[in-house]
Image 1: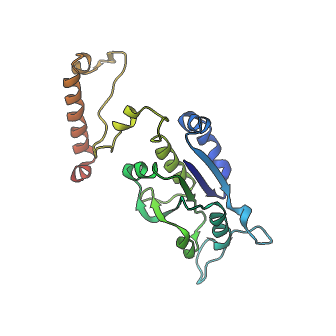
Image 2: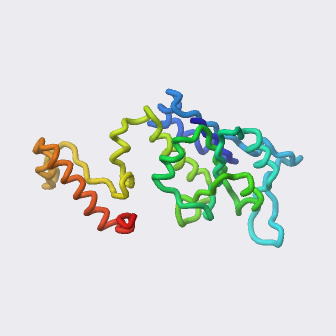
Image 3: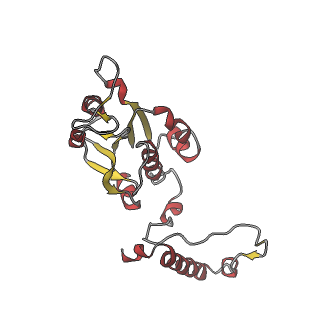
Length: 221
């Protein structure tokens, strides 16, 4: 899979993509991530990529030309162009799974007060990461890349993500490690029993209990 990220702040991604599982996935060529500064595509003599909004209002608005030209330069017949915006579909685990079947993702990070409405015309879908406001699309882009990459074949063990929270519309069951007792808190006996059927039942029931308590809306699905 190839992922192109369009941003005005490429340096923001260095730490995230240079550590842990993402770093290993890139080194092992499970995914190719290309961070593109779309300011490099501007034709403005002063290197501008934004301007004041028609009709007045606060802030600056990203202009069409640099983003249009950048997307056209990168896009192929296999590309899916994603715009990160509060107006988009709220991101979830099912969407992450679906994206793993794509060959090429182009993710556009907005910034400043927003972007020219006409930029939507070159996008295949719009995604929101939640009902809150961030300074730009860079952090949501990192979120998408992380959640998708970990699901690609060979990046982590299949067992690790099959039992993830949200994979069956249930939150994950509680897990424990050594020591068996810590400050008076003990590991549940069933996990020490060696009875895999009982352990599986315990974990399912705990997932159900926690989901009912924390996210009952998930059970409606």
